[in-house]
Amino acid sequence: MAQVGFIRNKNEIKYLILYIAERLIAPVPFEVMQELTMCDPAIEFFDFSECLNYLVRTEHLTCSGDELYAITEKGLQNGRATADEIPYSVRLNADGLVDAQNQKIKRARQVQSKITPRGNGTQGVELRFNDDYGIPLWQMELAVPDEAQAKLLVKRFQNAPEQMYNDLIKLLFSKP
Image (cartoon, rainbow, N blue to C red; front, side, top):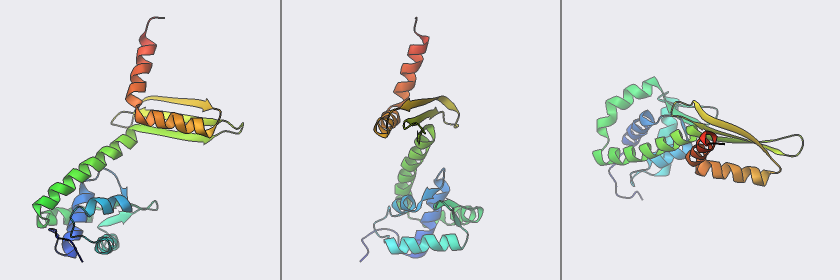
């Protein structure tokens, strides 16, 4: 049985999906779209899933080979025309969730890392810290003896790239 909420039918679920997809700054996987759309307790999983598939079939959304969902021009037009059909409180809730998701997307674009096994048994660790436009502020490649150390470097970098950048700049500009 559906919980109490403001969304009353599948059309409103479709409108909400389009509303959310329009505001995302990058394509997202199914799980993220689900989490964002189910911001109203009245929405059930199977209804959401059916509506999402319908919007892909009718070319309001695309689903890439990586299974990432993005809005199309048709979806933008129809989403803008139907946004007022979504209850205001649901839109506010969705806006907050989308803003948080967009921050995660921006952060993932800024802070990037990659571990590559090397032929000699060591691991290569690539660390990159980009500005808001995707231009590297700094990037570094390191060789470490094993995968455990590579993962530790990546984890520490992911947690504090700004601090590492600041420390590196201070070191480079300090007197010898």
